[in-house]
Length: 277
Image (cartoon, rainbow, N blue to C red; front, side, top):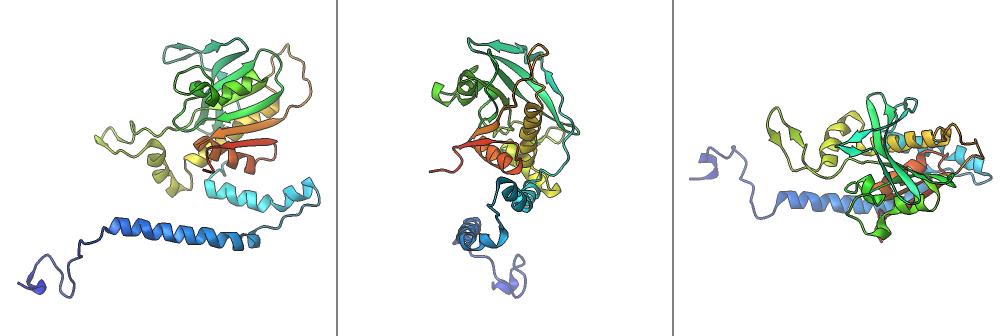
């Protein structure tokens, strides 16, 4: 029986030969395209930048369009609401506060967008802080892990703890992790093994929003609160304005990088584990 007599093959066509994996061919093509465009960017990016290095103010003004372009790319365009920081009294039955010799740690929640809040840890040194830092962990590391309050990371990688022990007031946001516990629809009893970050990203991207932009907004809202000075206790003197920095590792490194690019109030950025070698 010829192909024309086979009901599973349309007239004038032939069955796709299964010799090569189409999905592997597609991925290889995407990789080749992105590699080529990355190389082209080295010579073409000058057309998109008009840097004026005459002064810090002139530089900030000259790259403002690039900042706004990045803001649109990551979907961090919604106006944030006034930041209200609240202490979370109980989390999963644990006490809201944990104390170390040189700092205290409090679980907190802060307003970001209408219907969106950030959650994490506020680490406060025993003496008045020398600087203000938003420390952003990798997606699979909890705030408690980078603060040394939960096992899972060696001492040298507990960078939030190291910052507060060196006199910084540190706010550590929790990120959407890479587990797949909730990636699906319980009502339909349909689930996937896509990580939470990818599961949300794929759906939200259609609306021009996704986890990266949302989490950058949480970091910038945290910076709003730190820069406002409302972290000071009523008995604490106002003192001089303190520098605001961001530090991040892995997925948190990406978020710290983008946050510092968008907000000129951020004086310093530490990006770790994001640029590979």
